[in-house]
Length: 156
Image (cartoon, rainbow, N blue to C red; front, side, top):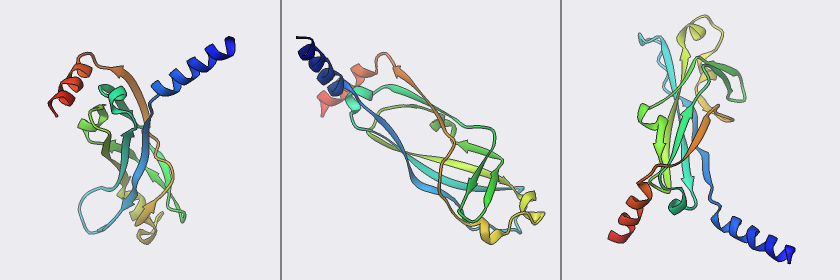
């Protein structure tokens, strides 16, 4: 009897379990670096994909993204010190409303590092594969959002 009860709870848990996934859609790239421009920084861009396999269960959940102050990345040729990681303000706090969403992330490098000769520009351009230091916090469903989903599905 205990085994049957355990199996029923296990099946119910696996059915109600949903997963929110983050994966790199496009790796970090520093492209078209022009040393004659007057800006003090060089910006690279990456895109991550946020997806869920069960939008009915995850609809209305809030995700908050945070980054460390600075970090290191590599393009398999050289380590690169990132001064700051950034993303658009509208993407820092996301309420799940779709099964899939693309989010842009930016990395800033100080131009003085390149001007001092510490890094050669030809090593800087290219893809930076590996890990992006993203801290993601998930919060429960915002009240009232589940009713919006039900209304949205009824109208379709």
